[in-house]
Length: 86
Image (tube, rainbow, N blue to C red; front, side, top):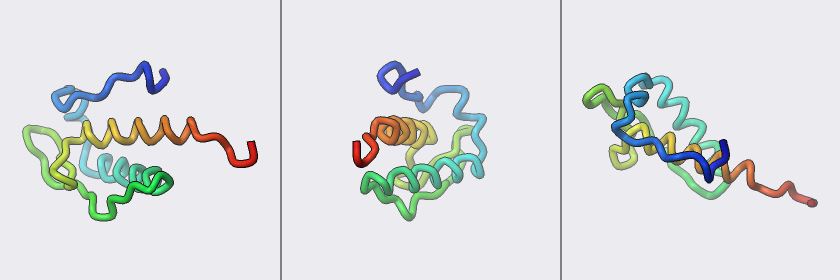
């Protein structure tokens, strides 16, 4: 599925409740790594709390769906990069 075909993850999506804090922390690490390549820095982004079964992320108390959607965009951008020298 390409980025154009992918729909954003909704904050109310039931699958969001399956993510644990360590899993979300790993997603944040990936966001930091991929985001740095594009000048996007979130050094203080961490998991915050669990509300109604959903792990919140501390960069504005964003829901896990925000991290998933941002990560999908970064992955698409990384794949779309033209290798240097081409």
